Length: 122
Image (cartoon, rainbow, N blue to C red; front, side, top):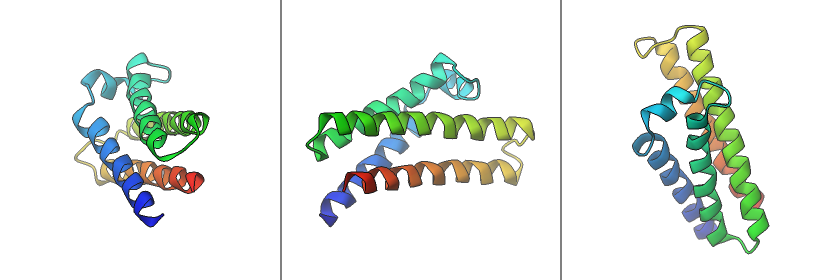
């Protein structure tokens, strides 16, 4: 059981790194702070689909995997939107330590999401 949890978390963290830092377009970056923007939604949809695929390999229920993928999409979208808008609201730029604090909080929230999704699956 521990091995499966460890592998599942590893895949989720790898997925997160890849979609957030390798496979994210500038349109997605710019769209994440505009609620309902298609590019911002697409970024989070990629997360939800990848999470669904990962969980589909580890759970016996297709429906459960769909729900987990949707939860990841929904939370990822709102976590990103909130971080972008806090930084915009207070005009935090990369030169400001608070920008990095909010980026760290964003990454922590995503990590806690993955821990919770795995917890729900065991």
